Image (cartoon, rainbow, N blue to C red; front, side, top):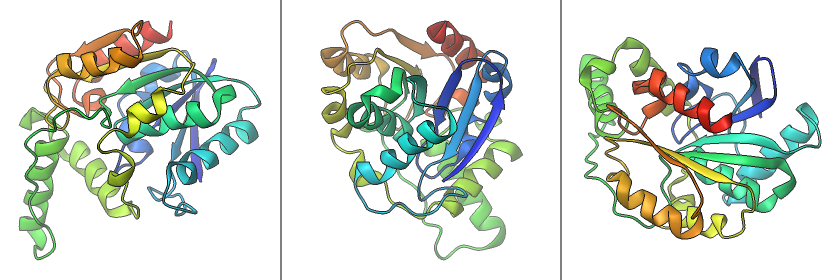
Length: 246
């Protein structure tokens, strides 16, 4: 696994989502790193990291737990997981409870709640400008709400994450793999949701599903943001995350 580190203060682990890399957190590193030491890996099978040793949750979270012990130490730390990273955060806390002090879930799936209307364009037979346009359209379908936010930076991060991904996490998410992990998590769990998330829509329904297992959680909404809420409205997300961590 490849890890990156920024900032100073108590350790904070940031776990990116599917078809992504550390760069999912690009617009959060400066703000969160002002008060925390950020440990930001590429999960197995994504970014610059090697493939996982298997195809179950353990093959993803055991190397993360090993990295925490080797790089940070034998102590519980705060964890923020985005989308598939939220699934991994929960399974990490379930399998390695001594590693998780607190979990903040950001727009995860795996709650057995209805999915959004996701119709992605096929890329296989496209080239050049047509391929670029389809990539941007897919990003707006699943990741972002406002076309104005789908700028060159967002598109570059999304494209790089998509091209560097060599594993398929979907079977590890749907329909209810977050629920299966949370029943065994003792650490406090909070959640942050994009108000306009198209992948996992209707924050009220998501909150209701989470509260069955985490009745005392704080559930915060990032306004004017889709699924990739910490990028689309970074200022609001950073403020909420720091408040929860505080």
